Amino acid sequence: MKCCILFGGPSREHDISLKSGLNVTRAALAAGHEPLPAFWTKDGLFRCAPGPIPDVAALDEFLERLNFLPELDAGAFLGWCRGQGVEVVFPALHGPWGEDGRVQGFFQVAGIPVVGQDVLGAAVSMDKLVTKALLLAAGLPTARHVELTEADPGEALARVRETVKLPCVLKAPSEGSSFGIAIASGEERFLQEFPSIFAMERRVMAEAFFQGRELTCGVLREADGTLRALPPTEIVPRVSVFFDFEAKYKPGGSDEITPARITPAQTARIQELAVRTHQALRLGQLSRVDFLLREPDEWVILEANSLPGFTEQSLFPQAAAVAGIAFPSLIDQLLGTAIPASPRPDPPRTR
Image 1: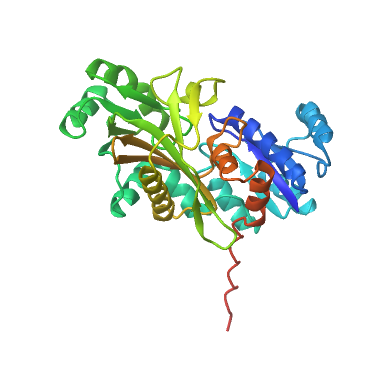
Image 2: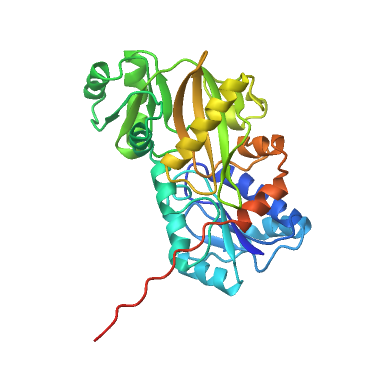
């Protein structure tokens, strides 16, 4: 299968996307596909391989020549996809533009199947405030929260005192990989952290602080449409007080224990909640749902990741491997069951 592996992009997670994209490309090769890597620059242009990559040596050559390849705008990139006979796109992208429905919509309109999500699932799961609303509507456990739209830190702090109280967690609603997040342990910390997070989107989600163990659980849709919860992973940050960017991606930044050190009953519970979250957020082929656990069985759903990382350190591939799914097999399954392009509407009839 000719598959475009799209990586890079204009988000803050550009560099992590590069690692995911190259890892996916190598796995697609190992699974017998014909990958066509496409690099999305931070400026929104595309540098594309001249043809399918036949082996790892050719991938290395592509990377060496990357800065010398012509830059294509979105229309020319789509022409490249069609000219190369791309059958499916794997967006190995993270953060805004890659996970929020815009890329998914681009390929849906172009009539090209895409790995991961459709527009709706990607968009609602990317916005933490929309996620909260859907979780609450489905009766799923999540921490109380408030949306702060006041630019003045003092006014925002007053709202927090009236609602979620301190300490609280401040989050940029549509960022990922722990960009735009801080624990406000008290008023001074709140006033210090709020302005920079507010500047990202002109809004902040303040969430009640919940002390507990950090766990995550992947969900994979099988070829027959059934949802399979993967073995949960326990995360023990070593370089930070929570699972922030450094703890996620710095070697040795965290201990990631799969399967998690929880009881069979707790395992069944987190897997049930992960599947229900996947369904509530209208997610497609895969997701990774993050949790906090206060013993013995008080769960808080934090968020769902619609395009979890595919680097060598990433949690979703680790859990799949423990479930007996080798990385090339995982990529092969995702390519083979990609979200189909929406059928084109019939043209209006004229009398």
